[in-house]
Image (cartoon, rainbow over all chains, first blue to last red; front, side, top):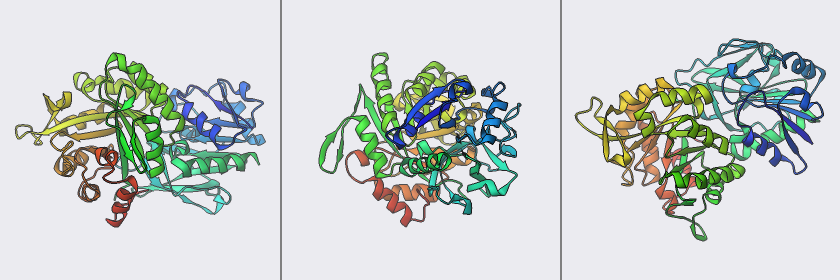
Length: 197
Length: 255
């Protein structure tokens, strides 16, 4: 399987590349600086380290949305999940707008939300190996308008947010599966299987 | 209500490419290779790992970053690198090598804008402010910030500095009690309590772990998010699994 990590100014993609390489022996992971460089990949990955404003989506927004609407398999992680939504309180500029809804600041007193938290799957989870707990590092969370897209949630000081969402062949993940040990990698493998099936 | 599961963070002192004292695992008398140890501790259930470069000389840096690179290849939990981080470029090099977070200590004391610059460039989630504190009745909170392994007192109060550091951009505070470090008589609860109450970012308590009950005590009586453990694991006094079991018995939520 060919996996392309879209490098739209995200920074360090090494540990993510390593995580995807580890899930199947015949996986070929490449880093694509432009969406056009990823056209032959079976799966696109939108990684995410850093802030909303650090990402240069401008030239890629429409191409990305059109491809995901057509059913291009895609996994967005952390900021990469947030970018799939309409907009964010973190910064100016529009997101990809594939999922309807905004990204808003967590209402918890303690921010950033850093560390391991419990994750609860919804009925939509099905074949996805939703982990019991996962590693998070974020201050903002996605608020999908369509509840039916939510695969898993996490609750922080009473603020419950979607930590996994799915639409068509795209899955957004707020936590870092690549930092969530064995369960995180198993979940990532199940997500890859699901979107590319 | 605590938001997060409490974390057990394993710290390895690295010196010139090897773990300083070596570590005893069942069936293995001494393992000094940080890469192998990192993987073993993850398998045991460690939630995070910290590499502390205890020499932190210019000559030791390439070897250290090479270890970070090799560890990142096999590790699937967060890795923090501390020791000798002086500039935003050092932070960049550490992150590029595969560290998830970088801990800054005395360089931030000299120049707090380093925290801001690093947070702006890489995000607060990867900037850890490492504070070494010592009891001092003349400091407003009763704890003073010290540097150089506790030998050099500063003009900073520990609570004030934690607050200022979080405001400047640190996304986490690694709080070491110099009085308790290595003594194995339990964490400095009072220090941890006052610092965790003063800041909104997570606090990792360090110094003093001698037995599983010390972690239970820490989490039951302070707002610490995480406990740093080193010597008692490396010497084989206990295991990460035993620590987690004791925490569960004490009704502390862990992974």
